[in-house]
Image (cartoon, rainbow, N blue to C red; front, top):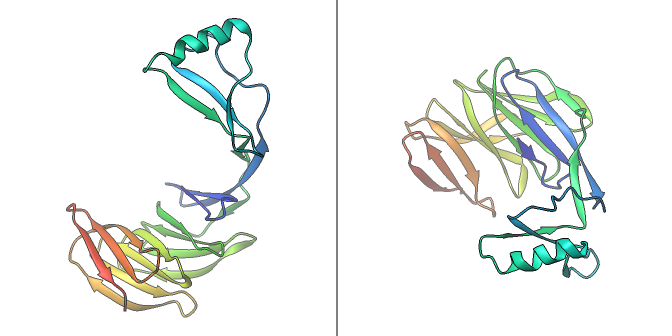
Amino acid sequence: MKFSLDGKYLASGGEDGIVRVWKVVEDVRSNELNILDNDPSNIYFKMNQFTGCVAPLDVDKEKLVKTEKLKRSSASTCVVIPPKTFRILAKPLHEFQGHKDDILDLAWSKSGFLLSSSVDKTVRLWQVGIDKCLRVFSHNNYVTCVNFNPVNDNVFISGSIDGKVRIWEVVRCRVVDYIDIREIVTAVCFRPDGKGTIVGTMTGNCRFYDIL
């Protein structure tokens, strides 16, 4: 699963090969909080959305006494309840179909495009609001991981069990650079400035590369 960078959507994928996009809804904190009166493990506070100040939750006298006792215990945990919470709508906004096997990884771009990699040896490009697949990027073997360039949505990186790490150009749907590390690639990630990447492998190695 991956949240979009703006926090509006959650993408999920699994064994059925379907990429689902769920809408994230923000709600104001409810005044009716499900807190147990005899909870010995937590001390509850609420945060003011305007000042950012934290204050003890309004409780009755009996519970206040319990809270005061808990404050002296180093074993108790301080729980701060934010002014706003979020939830995921029960019905997915999109069900993207096209993969023929398990989904292995997902990645969002800063402008809201979504990549999915699969056991079916492809990476597919999707966009919220469009039901059909925008691009298909074919590989030689299972595609274990994908990641968008954080500063350029037209570039992404993919890793495969064939041992190759590929840099792709989205618009032209082509590989612009690659390296064969001769190990099963399990994770890829761009540097925040987009000028480097780190690659993780099945053997436990992390390899760092500059992108020219």
